Amino acid sequence: MKGVFEVGSVEETWSLAAQFAAELKSGDVVCLEGDLGAGKTTFTQGLAAALKVKGRVSSPTFCLVQEHRCTEGAAIPMLVHMDLYRLNDERDVLAIGWEDYLAAGAMLVVEWPERAGSLVPEDARHIVFTHLEGEEHRRIEFR
Image (tube, rainbow, N blue to C red; front, side):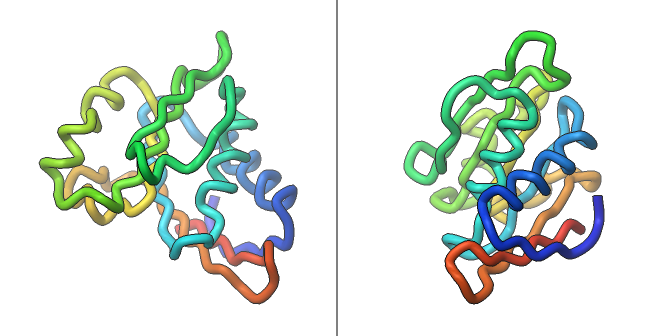
């Protein structure tokens, strides 16, 4: 998926996430970029719903990593949501299991991906979120 989309509600964000989810496979890395409150976690919740993740998805800001198992028979066994904001560099990212998760076939959804440096694969998907005027109005750019 490529392009720039404007959404005005959580439902529209989730719908866009569901369309994007159809393109994903095990081992993909999805990099979410944007300021605090720009919609990264809301998008991840929609992605998780489309991928049939069990349980509630919330921001991993304070715990750094949240593992979300998908229901049996789903195309992706696990969605791993990482918030790298509090990490310093690639060594810190490796210490929280980056390579282990990819080896296990998980899909990584990464906030603040610049902290991962060269660990981010060239084929990673990049999505940029911009908060526009209005409570739920966002620009979502797929690169």
